[in-house]
Image (cartoon, rainbow, N blue to C red; front, side):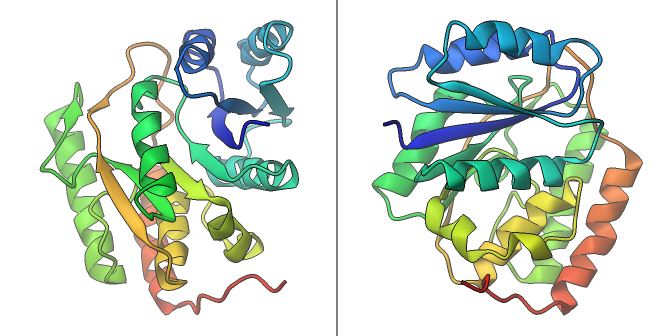
Length: 242
């Protein structure tokens, strides 16, 4: 059985989802894919269902009713992945801002280099972002610096959403006690892993902004992350009760 699953949350990704799925399945390293679709009205789930006829043993989907947030989508995916026995659990976007060819580097960091959590990092070797307006680059870069300062966490790309977890990390983090729903979720998961003593390794990537589909970014997402970081600093982090 394949021991690696990639969780991809989707909402209105009809332009990208088939290309992404086919690209991942064309890689030399075998992966399974779990789509978490939040009731996309554009037919994203229908495209996945059609492809499941072709990839019946390696493409899976959880459909949810309505937009319930990035964080809850990933937590649903984490629980599904652990229930199904996967050892390496990935997060990535559907829009090709994360290059599927970099999946192997994240896997190698966890399997062969001792990382418990590998992060595809835009900022560990300077700034590696393509096609973003300069204002967004500055905001993202300094947001990570702010998080690093508040949380005292030695991670350069604190909001990165391209990651590989070893199973034991997700088994140890108390997923019921994760508070952030949007992009603050990415910070909170890293901070929990850091505070619980897991080894975090940043793997440099080049992040390319989406060419098709619509961004899900909003001011509310950044607001949650800004204030959520302060709350995280005050909160006690404990492992999940077994």
